[in-house]
Image: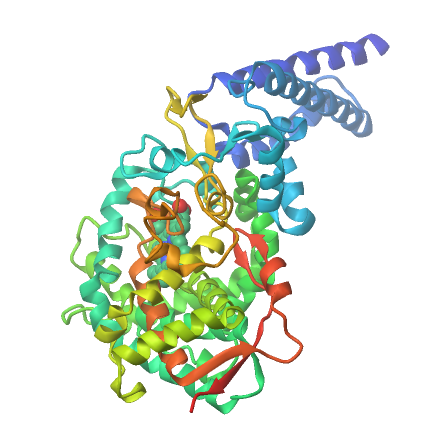
Length: 552
Ligand code: HEM
């Protein structure tokens, strides 16, 4: 009996190590099949229990105990083998980083969950270990300017990492943003680019202006009292997304309340941001029936929007919103068409999330800076006044565009507060690559954090100062063009909504400052807003009480 147990323990340990070696030799990424592996593991354990009972005549409890022993020893051996490999033999072993990070991505999960400020953890690690830090077993965070074109630029040899596999791996069911295959991505991207081109945007402008008017009328009603700029920026941004994305009024601005679709995401964003640090875990979690039930309402709203669009749009007239452009591609069997209903629904979800949260963050931060720096606000008001001498009745987008100082303010806001604080990772090509003089091995996930690289004194003079002039008259003197700046990402996967974001910001900010002086509400210093934002994949802002005082 004792011999049997020792024999089982020994065999299980050997199997554990062999299993790890087998995983290393696989020609594909094991995390892609993690869910299948877990399911097979459970089935194999049940099968083993029955075999012990049927073939070896063991009692149920005896068989269960033996399987549990095997399982514990198998797992311990596998994990020990993984740990030894990752610490001493892994291709990334020469890149410095905390021991726990070198061992497991669960360390990044812990660092994220602790205070939801992973970028601060990254900052600390860079200060301790240098420009290249191993932040996971095969994950490296880089603080080098030359990394931007090499990792994200148009000619990069890197591709989207398994981070993008969090919702599954079947490209036929995924949204544009989760597609890892560059060829498929390029094709699908065409439909998005049509829907968000400058020409298409021109056709959305009247609706953007209508939302600006709603925003103004709402703050006018509350003129003098403090309103939460974080919340109202979200309401504006969401309504623009509804109008431009779906030709639908989601009535956030008129009701003054957040739509349930975005509310459910905001309520659960911390869980998502924590789980996504270990993408296979999120993928597995999502594969468990009923596990994502809290998001059901969001999924249903997106599916309903899609149904309404499919029903309401004949396909003959010119598309009037982004979703119709995507549907047009489907109707015409274009190469850029989403290949399935699931993919279209996922596109809807991406449009709603990417199209609202980021823009809202940028707007709230911009309003904060205007309140904090009256000098900048006054200068902007004066320049807009000069461009439209007759006041707000003369407002025109062409004239707003001529006020380049507004763009300088937008750029400076996105420099200090990029909504994507840490860009999702890219995987290096199999042969690896050099960033400067450092070799990054193949199939390694590389991270760049705009929030850190945008404030690095090696490239940015007075990096912590809000100084829009660095984009204008001080541009040459402050070497702005040579500094790394990547709020919208770059290259193939750069943000397709960049123009829409800029247009919506120009519309709203120019109109607001023409009508109001912006200041902190009594009791508000802006300090909490400035310091206590969270990193929940996107930036999550605290409330900000501002007063909009009607100008004479
Ligand atoms: C200030 C506002 C915005 C910022 C800073 C921003 C930033 C970004 C960044 C950094 C990415 C790349 C993410 C990645 O590498 O996976 C991205 C992707 C994306 N953005 Fe934006 N975005 C903004 C507004 C918008 C808007 C208004 C839309 C509306 C349609 C939009 C739609 C998208 C989509 C669909 C993607 C996925 C593209 C891909 O994965 O290749 N974004 N955005």
